[in-house]
Each structure stands twice: as structure tokens, then as C-alpha cells.
Image 1 (cartoon, rainbow, N blue to C red):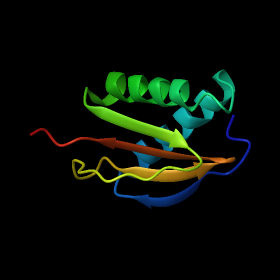
Image 2: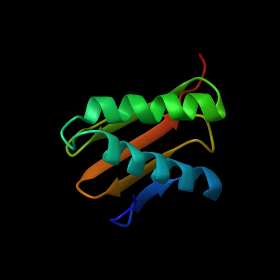
Image 3: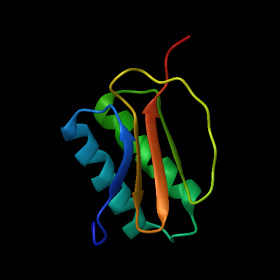
Image 4: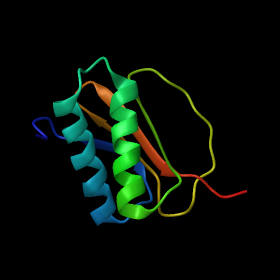
Length: 93
């Protein structure tokens, strides 16, 4: 668990939530094959929905692009081992 140090690229999350995001990502890496990014993303999304309420989104992979709008204080983008993790709560329309 958290064998490699997570490198935060960008965030506006409170520190406690950042730590939860990195811990959740580490758990997902322990539970799923490193190539099963979809299952890892689903696991992290469900954990955040349970802990912080519905509406969370998660992208996991080594090569992706994205463009999105997020609720202030709910965004983190970090690298752990060979994968990048993007977690955010979408803005209600």
C-alpha cells in the first residue's frame, strides 16, 4: 500500500481529501491488475461517492486527455507508480 510515493500534479482539494484520494488509489492498485484502469476508476469513484456524496468522476490511465468543469475544492490530479489519477466532482447543470 502506497509503496511508491504519489506525485501531485495539480489540486484544489483540502489536504485530508487529497490523502484519501491517494490512499484510495493505492488500494485500487492492490485490488486490480495495473492494466485494469476501468475497474480502478470505478472503485475510486464509488469510494468517493460513499464518503463525500454522489457526483464524483474518476479517470485512471497513462495516456489520456480531458477537459471538464469541477466543483471548487474537489479536484486532484496525481501520479502513483506508472498511472495517473484524475478525481473530481462535477458541477451540477
